[in-house]
Length: 376
Image 1: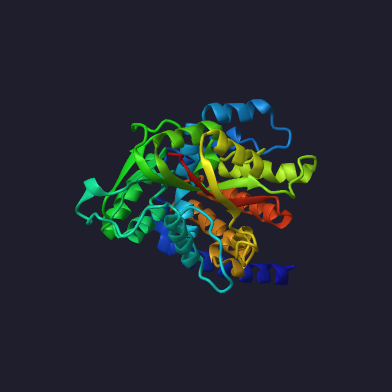
Image 2: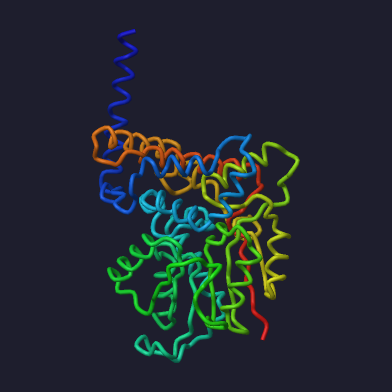
């Protein structure tokens, strides 16, 4: 018995020390200075997103009624972890075999920028903002895609980011200033009620932000309103694939957990339904494809970022997730990190597991990429 406890101690202590060494450089990221009473906030969020199969419809209805609060709370909770474990662009990206994770993110953002229909060469210099095409970044996060797109167009477009979360905009501004990013501005608000005139933007892009929409038709109509006639929108939509069986309890449970742990609303969003909502909003569909499919050239499934080192992220592996959890628990115990940090990581580990299951069952894609146009 003593030998077993000694072996366990010999294994656990190095693991905890390794976890601490991996995560320690990111310690300032986990300050959670923007969240009052983290422990209470994560508990309330978990109660709101009831993770029980017997969850009542009333809980889901309440989340939909308070969607702006729900989304803002979700990102206040997870942003530090996303930034540590994922980077500054909070979206998936199709990858080639042997391609670096962060390189795939940038390549995907460049591809989306190339589909916006903004003609080259541009007749505006970086100092001539009045002549620049205006671009809307829907749910801009902390500005990762914004910075990539701004550089792609050599600062000759003016990008406006709309986001519900104040902390995201504060970080985006700080990181933009750090990198010398030009010609970008922000609106803190709901992407269903964008405070600009009709026909304001020449182009719009959306990297998975509208997965937080509780009414996609309303959202798409608002984006249609603010887009100029002839302008394009490129949007990455979460959709249920043909293999999804709504009569299969396991499939339904997977998507329920995807929604509950990601603050989103994928249930019922089949590709055909999403396409119809876009067309009903007035858009002409130029093209759409699942960018994570083999047919689209992606060698690595989206869910593989959580499967192992082939996914390209140590923090996404099961061992990496456990190391991060161990660090959070240790940090809380030592009072270096606020109480509740480990519970946030636990929620995100549940999110990773649900994505892995969705990928294995081939029932969900986060990258049904639509290229749309507002008719002249």
